[in-house]
Image (cartoon, rainbow over all chains, first blue to last red; front, side, top):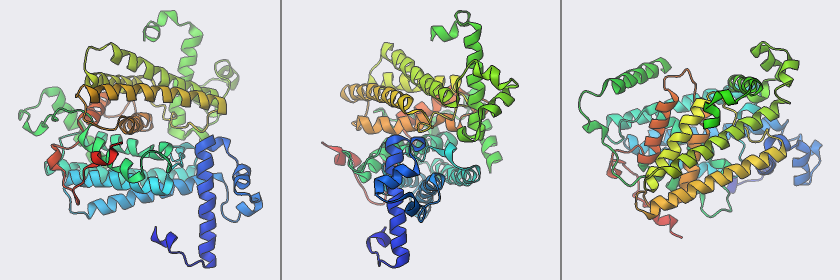
Length: 233
Length: 218
């Protein structure tokens, strides 16, 4: 971020800032009218430039979409890096990742409700984004497993837990508005709090205090879950 | 509910259309909505494109149908929760669990309901309005739970956005042939959203101690 605020205005920097302006306007229009209902002409008109000028900064709509997806993935990877190096316990790492991701996404991608539009990517781009997502999923699954092992997390199903909170995170750019009632930082803290502590008032059932022998069905489910996790690795 | 379960009331046309939609949903999910043509769908179903046109007008109509199904499911889940004799948390638990169970059961592999932008503008407006109504009912339910003390004093709107994100993205990863059944996914995700992941509040180590709730006071 500091790079942007502290700009030295070289040609390269000016180009980047202009591209950034194009992206911001595209994101705003996609978000408001829908990706498929917005054309490059609409974007050029909103910026008050010609379509030809626009082509200096972006090749087409799909490239813009791909850029947003890559930005979201980079934010996720940065959050995971910071969490892994934080020295926190498993639960702490998860809560930290969620809050960091949302704070950064709302700052950098707020209002760009397009990262759900994964199907509109070019097949090759789509594969890159999906692969990055899968890698990130696995890192978060390992963090949840770490939390269960160190006793800071309940014995939840790690895969399910990760899909649950990543699902919540994925749609933040769809509804977050920088002019809304809450700041990105507030949204980040509140969401992390809700996902880590839950909504209900009662003290969660401590699964580690359950009898040594779980019921057959539960045992089978756990075995299947382990097997499937091994297969993923 | 009764209408769907009681298949004798459905004529053959509706049943076939339902099959066409379900199968197309799977193909869209696997190949991506925008990378799949109606020709591809016809090939997969082993019918001619002309036959397909008896049931659907175009891809966008199919997408609209999936979105409408998701909204109907939401209404049904909410109705079930409303009728349950329980406090706010209990009703919320039922609404979330029913929604997930029905989405996984009926919308199985339809990972396309995230594709809001591909809808025709008027259809999109209708779906967004439907979602907003649904969100408002959830916010009201949460407010009841916070008031009766069964839910923590969370921000109802924030909570709804958080769990609706989790719920809406289920079709992106859920597979009817996966390791968990729809009912298992429903149980686990509901448990995660209601009870969270942490063993106890004190078990979460934190770099700097902060009280997120204090920042939310109006």
